Image (cartoon, rainbow, N blue to C red; front, top):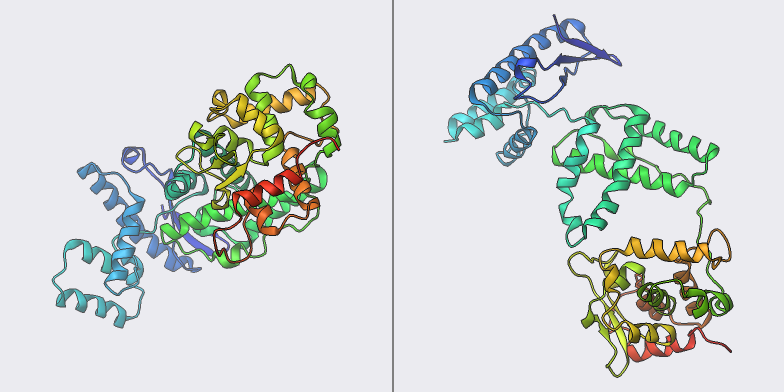
Length: 428
């Protein structure tokens, strides 16, 4: 049996891992590009590959070691340090004689150990990593992005990436990373375009999935030194279509006359009701409010305020979110009633959001189906704009990035208080 597979004119060595070696090599099959379109040459190379692979399996059996993809990367890195481009020994034989001689001369002149010889002469094949295997590797390589995130935040970070990769595999199949082409990405993009045309999806959802797939694939490929032309494959991904659904804001009059009327909120528990009041007058996100500790709530200061900081399990969405917000109106009253914060919902911002949305919708306290409790943040932003607050003041209160150089101490607490007094929710 020659273990050959032909794909688009190129031959591959292709063999299932025998049951005898499954314990040591968990791969379902081994597929290696032979880099030739000649069947005659491919058969010769396949014989060599098969002998090498069987010898490798027997060595695993004798030593008790398991197949390790990271070993290949270590050899690539070591070869580069020694001044060579890594090349597996089966392909090294096809290199110009000058290249082969230079490697052996180098080894003769240097007192190098066995590991260096393996690197210079190429003892390890590139790992064949399939799409269904890359998510755990991507998570491992992205640990720094999850520092200080709570388990719930980690779950919400992982889920959309897992879904994007799942959809990608369903669309193009469980391909080996090094076999991905521009046509695969275009196929996935077209798959999303069909969904947008025929079902209730928006382009923003598609674009996020395309970016997530790109990030996952390129992160793993870079780490394992896989030969992927990412710049070409993922070129011009964005689906440009003005169909984003924007949350509508509440009018100030509706907030006063309906939304925050105590009689209308009597069915809410004390903390949920006061969190709603605080949200309406600070613009702080629900996750930021439930992350407040007692020392972050400074009611006895000359200007009562809250301090939003990033700490373990309560990390902020961006570095710009760290800020101080004066307390006025409904927000000041809310924290006077809950001076230690919203302790029932610590680490559970989704639970608080669901509680508020469910109650407000169930009691007809949303003007339209498109409104959610988060629309209050949009209302807060609109009131800032209407008051002609400076860009820096808006950015500091909302926790947004300020697009100009960040010189000086920024907007003072007194200046912020002046802004918030102008936009307080109150009757004329």
